[in-house]
Image (cartoon, rainbow, N blue to C red; front, side):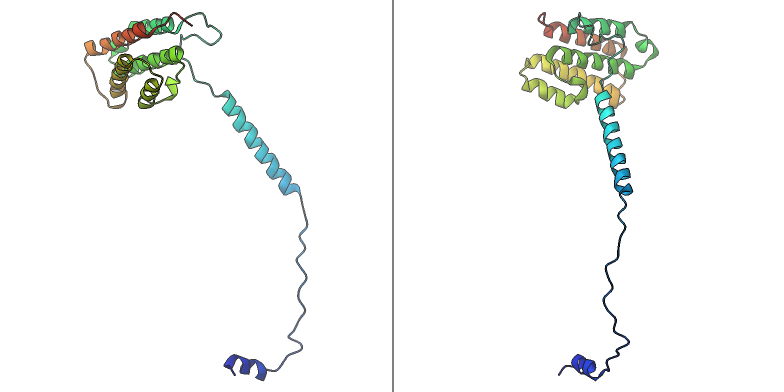
Length: 184
């Protein structure tokens, strides 16, 4: 016999020590917790949906809205490039804002001309999408050159010469000239 069995047999049984099994614990069912939790969840979903629906890309000041659909994308781009050229960013030496605005106008033009969401894509993703859409390679290469120059000023703190900065407007106009289409 094992030692454990011997200990159990030798011990005396205490009748007072044995008790019956306790009944299950009763929990009062209050539905308030579920109502409050459901209301908070529905409120969160409603607010999230409202912000999602309300989110819209912000147009450049002076750019046409969707209601004003009388101008072609290249006309809008020409006007915006002229406004950038007339601005005093170059005089003040604010190269970053100057190049940011040129890149924005070009991306907005690409969106209007090719229906590619250029404002939402990185430069690399934009160029990849343009190549996939079979846009002329010479145009895509020129756009790549212009956007990478603008990105280096915006993100790498490159300070171009004044003549080089003015050439960016000429490059943007060349791109618009070569890719514009009279068909809506």
